[in-house]
Length: 389
Image 1 (tube, rainbow, N blue to C red):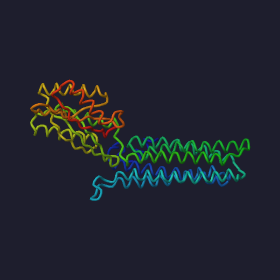
Image 2: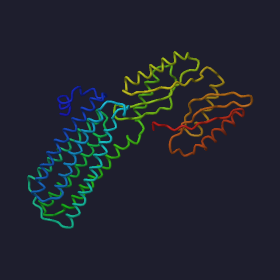
Image 3: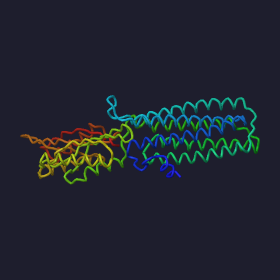
Image 4: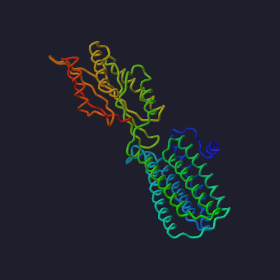
């Protein structure tokens, strides 16, 4: 059914890497969310008024907030689809994350208000009038929310949208919340047990947890999270597809919204290669990445001596020393400067965040082992941190 809806309402829906197609997905998902949630709100508010159930009315208000969230998401996608301008040269893609955070904040506030109402219901309970139609409405609501969760998860995976994935998670939490209300209604209808206020508290807690989870998903890209391992692997593979490029390091990825990724890295080439020829290979690598990953990239060329036996032996010795200090440690940018008495081995060491050894301890241990192996060698070490996790 989802495939049919996309084919009918989203033009060129298979070309999901294009920003304008992502915008169409976002607008379509927003419209579907608004329609479904308004239907659920209307049905539940009527049932809540008839039964005087605070948990049903709380669930109805939750659906109304979901409809408002869909409107904000829709606006966010429209704003995110605006092209770059003088004031925003990287585009407006992060508006999708900002709109998602606004939705999350609204969900948390709504959950808190529902929590207060439910406490009031516990302190001052009122008689309930559940009926078979109200039960049917709750069952229908659960089934529709299950479909909406699958719908948003499907679309979120297609266009890699954290906002849509967060909406899917919210729909699943709504299913659980409505199920709690349904159980409360059945207990009242069959056994005349009034747990309406307690059910309302459970619903409110689920609503607030969903809001906090969605906020986390939308804040992480704004704060600057690392790219996925799959993204890094694909990008490095494309660069190293040319045998003339013999290594990559110092990859940095900036995310300015889905479809607006900017990256830079250092690519190693043999120092003996002609500079103009090496420049052409670097240009072709940039083109491969941009064409295959819709990612803007700038590659810095690092010449590496590969045809000097002495330097190669020193490099291999240094690699073994660094790995003996820590298996997770890697080196790059290795070069040597020979003096009258000492040979400086100059290189960078890539150290993971929160590593068990301090930077100074790592430097000292590497220096001690290199000096022990070669008294005439001195290590000049720069500590690097990875920006790709």
